[in-house]
Length: 177
Image (tube, rainbow, N blue to C red; front, side, top):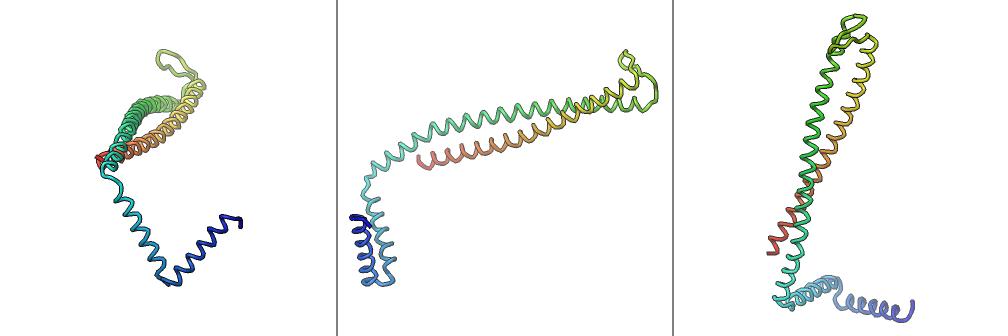
């Protein structure tokens, strides 16, 4: 071990050995008590005005953090509301398309060579193709709706986390004040 490091280690070992000989098994207790006394003495020596200024500075630092948290909460609330509207609208579209598919299916239950729907003539094969196309579109819309539902759950969790963070900051501010 080199120069000063070796000296420090040797001195520490010597002090530790001397302490163990003098105080025995109570050495750890003496060291712990000495540390507490030292810590208390340092805290007691700090002027009250300094502590008050430190608390004010910390309080001033919390204001921008609270404003940032408020903005995040507001943005998340807007995102959640927009997603809820989109999901509601998409559910209505899916329900409407599902009704149309059901009508086509019911129409195809009647065995005809052609069908007249909305003033237009359709062959049975055309109607079957239309039903298949619409059914695929409905499955895709259902998947998108499920994905938006998951996104909404995640946005709600983000909103809850942002609200909790804002509340925590607000409580810290009250505590400091």
